[in-house]
Image (cartoon, rainbow, N blue to C red; front, side, top):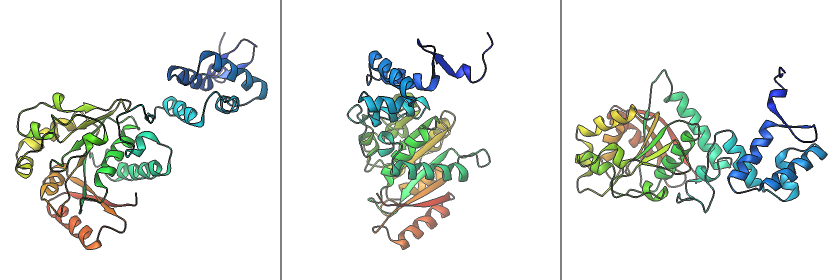
Length: 299
């Protein structure tokens, strides 16, 4: 029998009525996640048929699922992966990984959209972006980690490089080891495959930690091996973000920005000084990198 478009989107149930396929998938996702039993699914579907409710509304009304459970199922159904608190080593400071529908994540998604228009597009062919700031406490690493998550939630193969070999934090934010990383690669003692780590639960996100703290970060970043490493990673990843040290304290960020070719400046409300932000933009521009914008961090 030939099925119409409307019929092909439903699954028959025992009463002769039908339940949309998308609703059935939500139940299957929650069962697989251990948030719902098969019997619970049938109870929800029964109430759904009787009262004409959506699956999620019926499940919440019966007390069999929570709003958090429903958000989890919808996120997985539409390929927007996120983590559950208590089930991951990733820090809760990486807010986009745990609450992709919250206000902070929505602001990050809006920033992601602007970056897609200004840099990560076929016209500019950009793939690498340095996240920089004038001071150490401007929220640069917070923004870099969360931006990496929201890019990966688009299904883009994303790499976050912790190029701050003086005060590295990304390994801690993502619950990763830091024994091997960028410093070892720049010293020629490690390969890409050995240093890069994947983030469990976020299938398209990887992190290259800073690694052991070297005595000469600036000199390592100035070696020809650094642009060679970036070039090899560009062939493998669609988005590459680089965290960097504070530009007013070290010259590392200048090298990082120059090799990335583009930089995003982070300023913090009531902390960053306008003169420092302007100076940072000029310094980066003088290095040949494009300043794609400035973000005011209020978190």
